[in-house]
Length: 415
Image (cartoon, rainbow, N blue to C red; front, side):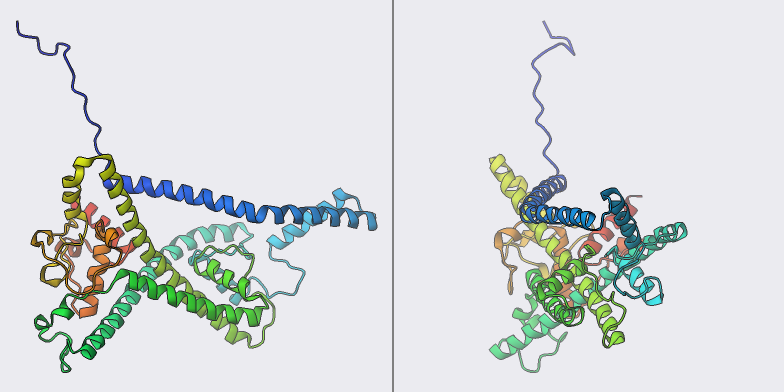
């Protein structure tokens, strides 16, 4: 007797769908950030809580002594202090400071707005000023972020050019490069130069050294002019350059400085260069963090599923640059969807290889885009833009800008 269709029978358990790699990376990063925040809160609470309790005890003792000596009730004294706090919020200080809303003060304020530093030492008090700030900050912050991304592209190009020149000089000294070699001429005959590409980790190291040097020079200036100690000056530089902007230390706030015009100009240059440099460094470090996440996901996937080696290799061919791969024609070739099509050659890379071999086994397209631009810029090749990207008006960019432009191009193509 044949069983009827739809009759109850043994049902096969459906295996849960594997977690998407992008979603897995997002969840892992969210968990790591939550753990990082918890660890930071624990450390700062242990460091700062005793000092806060001691300061609160000293303040209560001072308040009671003042109330007893001058025969002022505590409620009246607290009301007076609240009025003083309101005056401080409006920009009134006991010490003689420069005007907050003259043109230099207003220019300093809008600079902190569009750069997203936001010290908080000056804030609009009128309704019209607050409404204007919303509109002004919307376009100003967007334009400044675009400027930071364009600055990142140019500083990456400059570093690639310098690193390429240093590599050529090293090859000439070792005799691997003809003395009469000129860039762009007969490059097929120079194997060591063709296979070379700048390392992202070298770019990160150079940006880090430049950021430290800039911060040390700026700290020396702030120590001499503002009267801060050197550690406070370094702390102010990081808080400002990273656009955190607590506002506990703010430069250029006194009424009169020696060589005031020169100091304000130097302060502006240091803040502008520091913000651009730290923004570029953050973008490059974010790429390295992404590679670490890919490496963790790969290790986790292989431990959970011993049979996933083939599938992970297949995913690696689409999204990764594997250590045993060979770049076709000695450069990275990316298709419009981000595929890496040189894995089938099976030959090894020549020239410089990115360090941290295990991390490079799971490199993603963002690293490939950055390396491709470093390689092309160093060799003087024109930047090739794919047809779909050119039609949609999106250029590649570097780092976060490249990822955003690629996503925009994909969504525009799908429509």
